[in-house]
Image 1 (tube, rainbow, N blue to C red):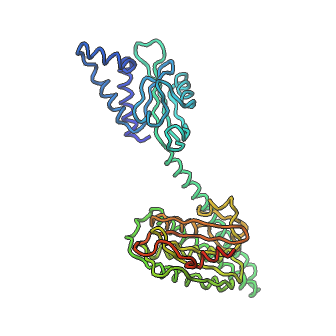
Image 2 (image 1 turned 90 degrees about the vertical axis):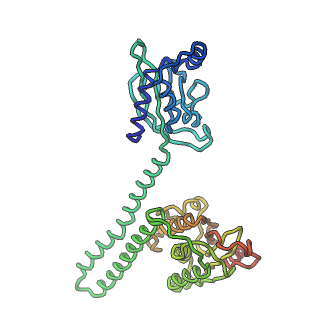
Image 3 (image 1 turned 45 degrees about the vertical axis):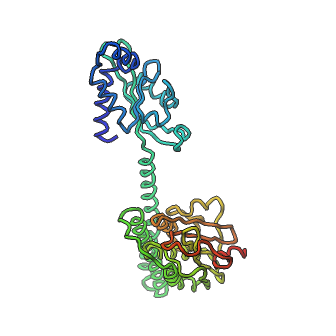
Length: 399
């Protein structure tokens, strides 16, 4: 809880303590005021008004566990019905506060309470005492939504752990290879072999660093450049050119087809990177002698760029995770393919930054089709493909 919110809560709770009796019988007070014209203490009205305006949810619970007061934020969460708390964990926290004093805890609210999905709330429970009351007074609960904060912390922690793990592998390999070269100084053939491995690991390390920088930029580290009209044909041609050497090394053919002349609004360098990553992924997981197809078509206001391979395919249980950072379907193939596990995550963020999406169709043993969807800059052309327009679609149908 921020210092400002803590200060506000402190002031509010102070007002609540002073006006506990008044808040407990608000309807009686209103009736008495209407009959007599007597105005209640102004500080209680200010406290109640401040509670109503606060973003954090505030609930005041009496000694018999009846809810004396709940501000609009608390009602919106769905944790109060009538004069009762609906969440058992909150009721337990109230009892713990009453027996042992102030408590702080994280409480997870079910998604069906307010219909907005599960939420994690940071709850601060405070026992209030009336100066003249012989028994413990009410308990105030202040709840603040920390769902996104905790999720961000988890993502950051996982990211740091994954980066450390990924960097450790090539750095460790470089250290071992350097030691091996020292020990094989009198064997030129061994030195040449180890030097080749060092070059490979250094290239892998450099690629990992570059992709980490790219991902950081795409995730908001830098503002997104202005979107301008981009020719999809140029994007595909540049991506194919960047991948051609790796494909030729595995005797793979890259077939280009589909609908020509499509224009999207975007950042050309990012779109080229995304399509290149899709093609590089197809090359890495395809067997030699097969064909990779890349094609574009216009559909429902989007340009769809599909990359199809006839590789190993993706198991059903892994398909929803392939766009996660550092996730690999087969960890044992990571060193052989040279992948960093960041390529598809970069594609996902490029698509998101352009107001588009990326999806995958795959079957084990048959291959995969990744489809990148980017909003068209010009929408007065065709909105769907005719049969045979897309080489990638045709390749998928032939299976």
